[in-house]
Image (cartoon, rainbow, N blue to C red; front, side, top):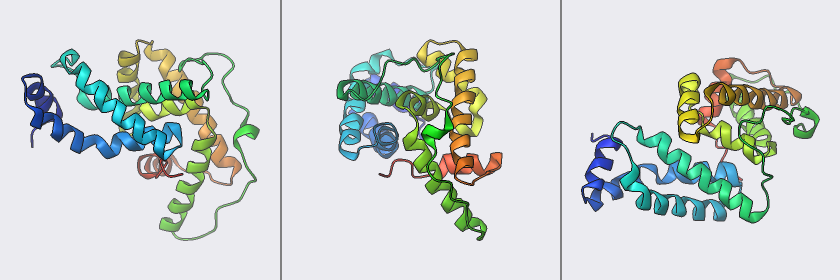
Length: 211
């Protein structure tokens, strides 16, 4: 299978078929990312389309030694943030704020409902539903940063986010930990106390894009 980076190289050399393949590979993922941030299907569809337009316009700027997916994901996130600003739903708060972070779990929490004592699959389903509610309650700038993280290797991902956003890795790491704690705190307020592996699975598989 041809890698994303090889397809980008082919596209830069004039192959429109390479672009079509990249769009086919990532259309659903980009739409999902935009939904997770915008929480609106129609806005997300527009943002996804705009992301690929920006990709088309910026293709000459792609460096051969760069990983394609983090780069494309960043374009999708910044596009969605721009749309939130236009819609008036985003306060100008940097992704790496060091003071005044929203840590008041009462804001995020709804009534605490303990998970039922069911089997593992049912428990994970309940955890995903709770995670979806908590995700929607996060401020947009916190959702944006957490969405950037590849949770299968978050420490490496933090470095990539810092590189693509031009921020210090330590600041990105601090904000990632802080916002994650807010998310976990919301889950705990609902009666869930997931292990690290359960939370990772929920983050990787949860349908957070659903409304």
